[in-house]
Image (cartoon, rainbow, N blue to C red):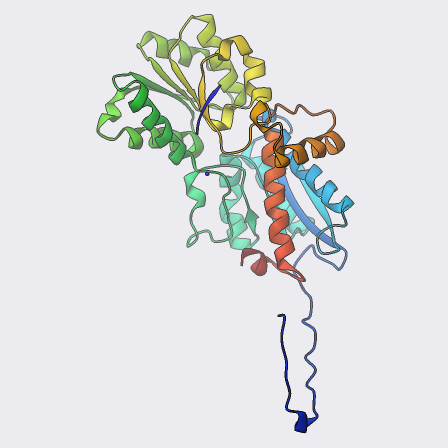
Length: 352
């Protein structure tokens, strides 16, 4: 693929006074799920269901904390990372997150995956004032520090990516007829809005808006319809299952538009391999992490560290699946926050 390339304190006392004030050490301050020996956090992820191709994200996230514990934990505390399957189903996410917060008493969640799933718990987490850290979704809605101050995004937002695709389209095929495949929820609609906003006065170039539901068996009909309408710029914003289906179907019907594949569905292992590498030739995509299948990273220190991590903690996992990179990075960000909290491991201090 081609990528478009984000006290010390010095104290002095008057000698004549001959007095010394001793300041007490700062007391430890713990929130739920924290002891002198443990920090309990949690998340949900699609270990099953239509988005199970994203299971590498929570698997790598959990494995990262096994590595951290083997290294002595965070400030001497072991991380107990609880991860539950929600099957990419919002009602199940609500059930599992309530268990994490009310029964397991986690300090925070980290890397809960999916726009529809995080949307289902968004208000609950903020009402309960539980940090909803680094959600594994790029929906624009997470940028709401006034209305939902306990939720923090992590990856580039989908509208920004959509604008990038529009800019590329205007540069490469300014007279093109654009079709957008997107999931029928806030995540997919963000991409569509970004594309249209990016096209600006030429938004009428979008002649096909093809949505799908996660319960749909295929997106074959949407692909066939776009070809029939004369679409020659195909912006594919499907999750891996549907992105792969669209790539395969386009090849089957010998449809060869300018094919732009979004970052959420461009994993070599989760999308391109199932789609067939021959079918994925000339696809254009973007990415905001180091693609583990790209040989340009072979001598990169960060890449080498990740490979060593994978070899030890996920030895049977597919290294071409970018979900294992995302989960690793999300856990690293969470680890840094917890380190900076020191002995003040409270929900308020996490947010600070």
